[in-house]
Length: 134
Image (cartoon, rainbow, N blue to C red):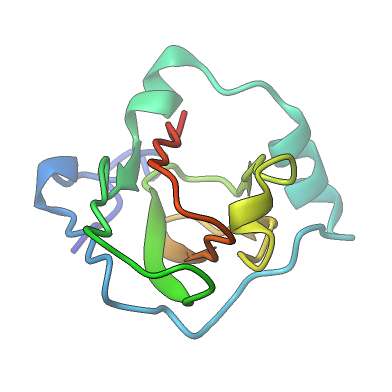
């Protein structure tokens, strides 16, 4: 998939080729923190504009269709880190009651690695729900 270029500091691949399948759960989950000094420095450093372009997320949109009250509906939201350093990804959905069973909340994702977050929708009453993912 991706490989180091001659300088060894960037990955050479096309992010458009990364597939984000909402039905595929990536079983391996990464910790939400690290004790490794190099990784701590990496996740505490603000990403550059270029580094942000090396991150692919998806799916951009997911339609559950018609679902039933008190039913459990799940899909995977994935993040691919195409950078040469660890990144920390945190989903901020704690204020959305219908997503309270989702997780993990955060992961420290290694370079050139895909991670998934399982979003679980638990509707408690009939409603039309649109939740943007930013």
